[in-house]
Length: 294
Image 1 (cartoon, rainbow, N blue to C red):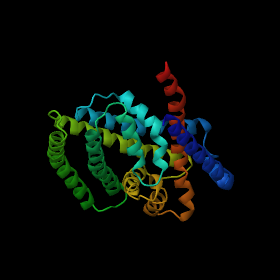
Image 2: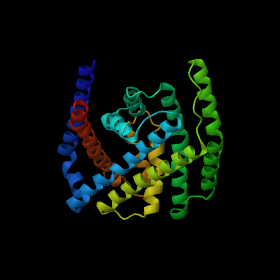
Image 3: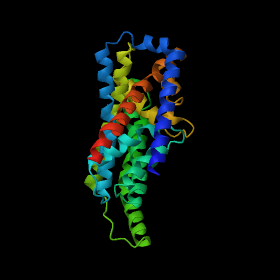
Image 4: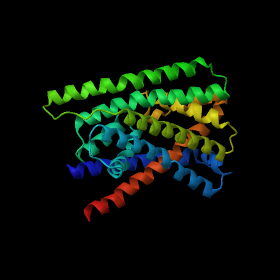
């Protein structure tokens, strides 16, 4: 079974690398033109900067699982995330969560905690991304102020109702599976989750803004981060698009009022993320494998 999993992982990694090579051969000159004005050190720094939202996301997972009573460390969550990060490029939108959950289940995390975590991540991340997007775009791009109030109302409603609903679910599951009394999610835990998600979207949007500036594109920070948070989160709802590919790009271009010539420019941001994810996978495949064998 382990051999088959490793074989599938290697085949998928080979396919991803093959696609990257094909893109470089077919559209390489156009892509290189985008980065030609950027200093190599700046590009390397950009890839390193792209690690920060990854770690902010794993911090959210760690906080949430601990609130649900799981004995898990940030290191264990990071190892599971490193090993499964390339599954985000599969169509369907669920494979990253499913593969990471399976890896954590092998670490002893209970199934019901992972189910609740899925609900928590979607319940909290969506309104926060929409709130950040509407706030920043209202400040810089003339988006109606009522969208901010709608976002705040949605966030407040979820903050008030999410915890008791999830606590009832945990109690029902525990009775059904004859488990011990479940740990209830604390108000401070919800606050920590909110803060980690705010940090995630602000940092991720800033990485995107830094990328646009590094390729010579003039844009305000509020527009870049606000548009990124709003449309990147929405694009993840498209099950046919791996990682929102082909949904986020035209949406952001329409917001920024750029021509379709900018499609490649915005889309090339995914190269930065792909390089980051390949590095994460490489770390998982070599360093973590060696450490687990010693």
